[in-house]
Structures are given as C-alpha cells and as structure tokens.
Length: 177
Image 1 (cartoon, rainbow, N blue to C red):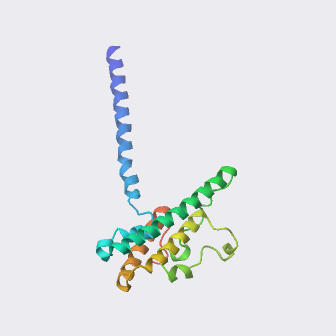
Image 2 (tube, rainbow, N blue to C red):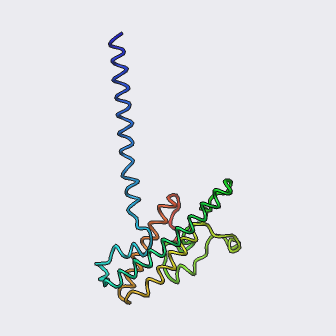
Image 3 (cartoon, rainbow, N blue to C red):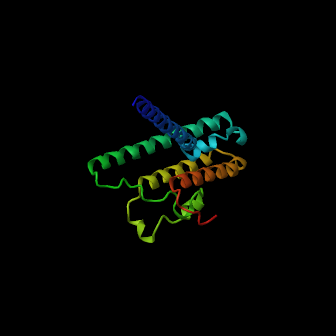
C-alpha cells in the first residue's frame, strides 16, 4: 500500500513538472512577437545608425511616433468604451490592415482598396484606423528624411508592415508576392 501511495505521489510530481515545462516552452513565441516595433516610424528609428540620422531627425521622428501612439491610444480607448457599452459588438477587428496593398507605403498604400467595393460606406475597423494613422504619420516622417534616407526608410517601414500583417493574419497567404 505504501509503495502505491509513493508511486502516485511521484506520478503527480512528474505531471506537475511536465506541465510547468510545457508552459516555459511557450514563452519564446510570445517574446518574439513582442520584438516587433510599435509603428513604422519606430521600425525606422531602430535603423537610425544605418540611415545616419542626425540627432534632430531622431528627435523629430520620436515626436511623430509619440503623437501617433497618443492618437492610437485615444482610438483604443474609444473602442473600449463602445465595446463596454455594447458587449454584443465584435470590437471592429474584422478588417485587414493595409487592404490589398499590404505592406506598401506612401502612394502605393493610398491606391489600394480596402476590402470589397461596398465597404466604402461601412465604418472602418479599429485596426484600419490605426493603420491609416501609421501611414499618415510615416508620410509626415518622410519629410524629415533626406532623399537617400527616404528610400531605405520606406523599405524598412514596408517590411515592418508586412511582418505586422503576417502576425495579425497568420492564415492569410500573400497574394502579391
């Protein structure tokens, strides 16, 4: 009887250890996704040395990124307020970020359609509005950069937007690449 009790105790301890180990394995996935910058401008700022940004350019880009974060925080707060008033709402995350021109910046993004042709009258989702904010802030940030910096910064920002799209829509397949 004593041997059976000991066997059960050891099995329970082993099971607890196995569960703890499996939870630890999930942490890198979450931390890897957290490494993505918060905006296109933040992605460009991560490459400030490569782009040879001046201190004034860095300061202005940080200001624009902070303004963007404030705009998006206000959008998130308003969405939370609406969601708490109407718990049956879906939260407005159904739309895609960047529409048909995923990852493109500047005029290429502005030309792309967002969803179906009839979606023009429908209100934009929170994700779409935040994406528009990111695009507008980035276009403003381009004015701070030299022509040479702008070309590389656009590549960096486009790559960031593509990675963000891919993480937010893991089942989607690229249609234009």
